[in-house]
Amino acid sequence: MGASDRTGNGALAVTIEIDTTEIASEEGGIRLEPRERFVLHIPSSPLLSPQVDVAHTRFIGSPHVLQGHRLCLYLDPAREWNPAGGISSCLNRLWNWLSDAAGNRFDASTALYHAVGGVLHQSAGTPTIVVREPVPKKRVQAGYLTPRTPQRLDLAFTPQDQQTARLPVITTPAPLPMGAGTTLLQLLQQIDGPLVGSASADSPFAPAVLTSLVTSVVRNAEDTPQYFLLAVPHPAGGPPHLLAGRIPASAANELRALARRQPGSLSSLTPSAVNPTLPIEWCRVSDERHAVTTRRDESRPVNNYQGKGIHIWGCGGIGSWTAEFIARAGAAHITLCDPSVVTGGLLVRQNYLEPDIGAAKAAALADRLRSINDSLTVDVADGMLPEDTEQIMAEADVVIDATVSRAIGQFLDILAQTPHRKATLAQFATDTRTGTLGILTVSAPRTTQGPYTLDALAGASVLDDPHLELYHPLWQDAERGDELVPTRGCSVPTFHGSSADLAAVAATLTTFLGMHLAAPTSGTHLVALPHAHSGPHHHFVPQEP
Image (cartoon, rainbow, N blue to C red):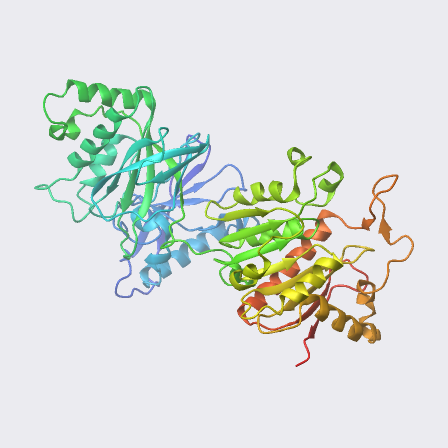
């Protein structure tokens, strides 16, 4: 144990030495000295994990080494840092880190931005830059930012409207193992620094970066900040990592003044002309490029809705939640149909908001779904049902009846017999008494019987089985007290149930239907939530061949 000191943020900095002679080294791993020295930063709060730095640059460029000197011991401190274990748990983690690093057991391709040096200094108050388009393989190119909200800007490579601001998109010649700095001059120095590897003093790239910045800044309005995007090659190959920076408005004005003073071509500007204190603020990047992003629901049944065209008839307690789950699952096109209007009492359990009161359910829900996913197309069909139902059977991937209407259910049975039907037909419902039971009936494309008929066949089987008494209410007439009359007067009776009940039922049925899209079969699923009488439970009634 060596010297200790307090840092500016109150952390205790302790210098330690570790005997590493027992750690085995493998080809491709980092080379350890017999005794390695580290600086352990212990935060004043046990809620924060300790950090470990080295004073040398021997580990530079290795996965999980940030800015050449910080070892990334905790990828997810919330799960990996154990305050109850004390400092010994951190030291054990450091020992394991050194063993993996020396043994070449790190995978650079999964090291996030660590392999390009990292940006440890996210700046407060900066917006998030959303990137969805692939970044063209050019050294320097123009990009355009469109403000969506005060905290979000969207990147495109063609101007979208008059609000767009120009920014340079710069592909650096090599990774930035020492990071990107906190000033413009530091960034320019890092790009052509001696530790970068591929940069050459005979062909420095920093002047081109400065020229592209100044070219953009003079095209943007005075007193506006200047953004830029760095596409940093990843040592493990594949798409570049993206870093987004912002030069504040006052500093951007300084660059504009520099350009006005520059005689002749802007390309003659050199880093030596830049004020060394001109700051960079680093923005968060929401990198949503398909090449680098894996959907969090990739291996789940709802992933089968991705890219599909879905019809949802009935946007009430079950249908409104189902629509949102399918929208989040990546459906390409959703058509909603429900002639009812949102009233205040529905907000207790349906997927609507105060501003929706008085609006048609389908239209209000469509607006909500569009705000979930920019790439989703949402249409609203007028009336109780769309007009082109036979065409829907031939073109849609899924039609969900969540209306609890006998008439619509019987009509869907007729449509099930449409020749060459493509659509999987499904019927969603819950029980009247509690809203904790769910029923999903699926008619696969080659099944001539529709969900309404299959539901009746399943009901006859379930009612004859005393072991399935839990589900008998789904086919029995409601008894006195089972139904809820929400307001005085001639109010249409409805079922009991909360938003938590209905969202859980809808989520479960949506998941089961997703499984049928992967393996088309027909039948009826019965589910009971954990707090249902005799729940949790699931039973499937297959269609008889």
